[in-house]
Each structure stands twice: as C-alpha cells, then as structure tokens.
Length: 202
Image (cartoon, rainbow, N blue to C red; front, side):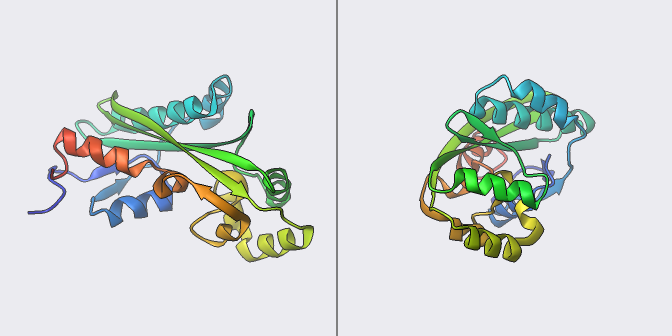
C-alpha cells in the first residue's frame, strides 16, 4: 500500500521549490497553488510579532487563503523568518542588499524560524514552528564578491541571501538544528500531523 492514503494530493500554498522537493521526496503527491494574499500588508502586521510568531502568522494566512479556494482539500502553508538578535531580515531586494545583509550576519549567530500550518475550508487544523541556530564565519570582502558572483540571483530567493543546500554552505562555521527547518519547512512535525490526521500511513 502507498504511504499517502488521502484521495487527493496535498496542496502546497507556496511557490518554494525546496518545500515542494522535500514533500515529493517524502513520497507525498503535491499540487502547488501559490497563495493570493497581500504579503506586504501581512508583513506589516507580522512586524509587531516576535520572529517565530511572524513566521506562524504568514504560514497560517497562506494556508487559509488557498484552502478557501479549494473546498475539502488539505492545504499546507509555510514561511520562514531570520533574526540576528532583535533585528529581523527579509529577502534582499538586489545583490547590493544581499551583500549588506551577509556582512551584517558574518561572524555572528543568527536564528531561522520556520513555520507550517495546515488548513481545510479556511479552518486551521494544525500549526507549529521550529527554530535553528546558524553561525556564519567571518567573510572577507573578496570572498563576498566571489560568493555573490557564483551564486547569482539565487541570493535573492531566500531570507539571509543564501541557500544552505547550495553554495550558501560555504558561508558557515556551524549549523545547529533540523535540516528541514533550515530549508524552510519543519517537515517532521508536518509528517507527524499528517499521520495523526490519517493522510499518511502510520
């Protein structure tokens, strides 16, 4: 019998390729439906929350938004925030901003907070958040130039200006936390919920 027991594929309310790949690699059929929400307005509200709370709010609203358009379907939303002390970082708008961000993170420890929420018919059935600590090594100006040139526009695709599963690994001295959380989805917690809910084999 297959691992996935639900009649329909799981709906992923995100255009994130790493999240889709993680779920598909776990044997879960996925239907991608990016959310139609005003992320700027949501981020303004999230700005009043701590970084883990902000990630949960964004994940929740993504899942809820898509689930209202897809009756009876199970919808997963996810989001991630990055904090250096009390300062939050967003996706850099261009390579210059990515360089500034990396210089700010270099030689210090920052925290990634990844949240997941599951909704059906606009109702949140499950939500959780997990955190990881990453120690970035000191980075010379020369290395930053080399990294930014090699990574290209991929530095604009994630908070922090790096993708740990790709060239971003060269930026780090130490990584503490769940690998999936660092990639943007607390996958183990989501799988546990899906087993309890009956969509996955136990």
